Image (cartoon, rainbow, N blue to C red; front, side, top):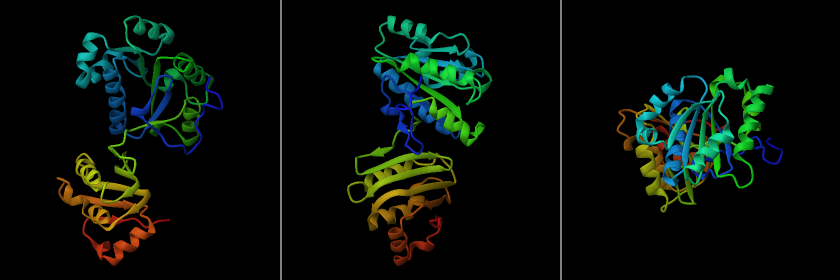
Length: 284
């Protein structure tokens, strides 16, 4: 069972999925299909590179249908047995883990789709029993396994999401698209965009330019969350103002969200507050 010591505290940041380690049992309360695809794909690909066995547990659809969805990108792993798709109902996790390790895999990665009709609604005894069983199988001392449980957060009220997190060791999130220890850039999915943390200066500017060029996946709007930005020089601000020029999307609108006061002042002094295609949201 998840104890008070292993429960995540409200407000704690998500763990990048690439930082997951054996023994981790994390949840992914995704906001849309794009976020789910990004995090799940990284989780499975990391496992393939490590030589781990991959097990995909399905609740809300036949295992064959889920395997068909996974075939794009993971067809070879399905064919040679590195990726196995199983229905959650009736699956004995201890047996699943033992079978995978018996084949010589150094570890096992379990990805599960969570359907309340089978697992029970968060807050019910059936939900707690299922997630505690997963936790016991994965998080025991010396475990070579890790688990990522996926939840469509649009189905759940806030108290249900807190209950989901309570039965996991934390939340998983997308890997950073840039992180050099000075500036960290993490993708956003609803709205599409980027969250910037740290400092934008001469050393991190090339990483910012590359991230802006690749961001948004064709969306007409790009949100840049600056709430965790501690420093930005003039060239960095100029790059943010011209972010739409780096995109192939015609007339893309760039939203500068939670801009620090010093950046707002620089923006006005430079006359960039009226730049076309830029919306600087007022800070609360």
